[in-house]
Image 1: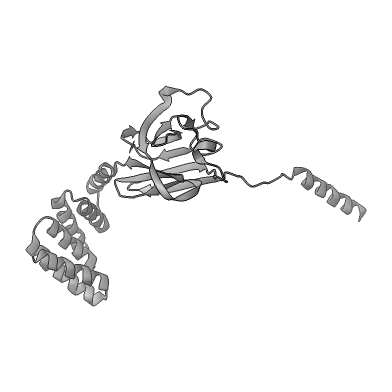
Image 2: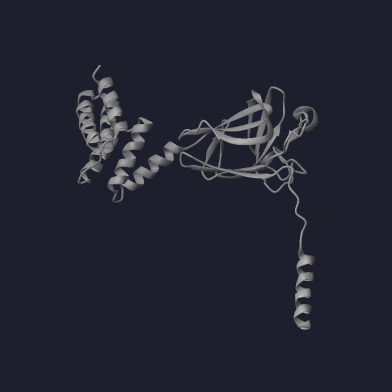
Length: 281
């Protein structure tokens, strides 16, 4: 019994000596991931709050570089090449810094991500992109430094920075067209499935390119189905409409309309009726 108590006592002492103090971070870490088009983007940063301070007077003096957050440098990564504010940037991970101004900020991507804040020695050769972003004023006060994604399209997005009454939308363009086209061409050299043909046709339709190929692919996709669904038929109608072949588009949309009614899809009934009306003018 004494031996057991002694062992338990030793265990309690061991646990006590390895315990660590835990306190909350004033500037908590955030990780933001977003897929846009065929590019994956991730931002890692620490989020300071105003806590009664004035952003420019107390935290960000104008005309000086800032680490773009708190603690360790903020990083952004892309898994494809991008165009960041007008400059081509290779896939990779970069630190973000800012030169703060009243009317505009200069945002810098820096090839070196192991700094605690600003690099001890700034190396201009490591600057991979710089863009001057005009300040947009926020009506509502943003208490905590925030980086988010907005205006998402398949070919671009805005990386939006907000703090206090300052808002900075940074335009980032993506190579989605090149990547998607290369993927389609590679698939067509193999043994594409009906879904491959459908997806290729759908992409060309939405991008309004290669419409002859889009029509060829949607026809092949429909032919590979024993009973192609009404939305496949509708996409064929849309491709024909985009090509200016309105009479054929109307007849195809009527078939999709009939199928949609049978399937009980009110959405596609409405869409087909609207398209038929448009192409009949």
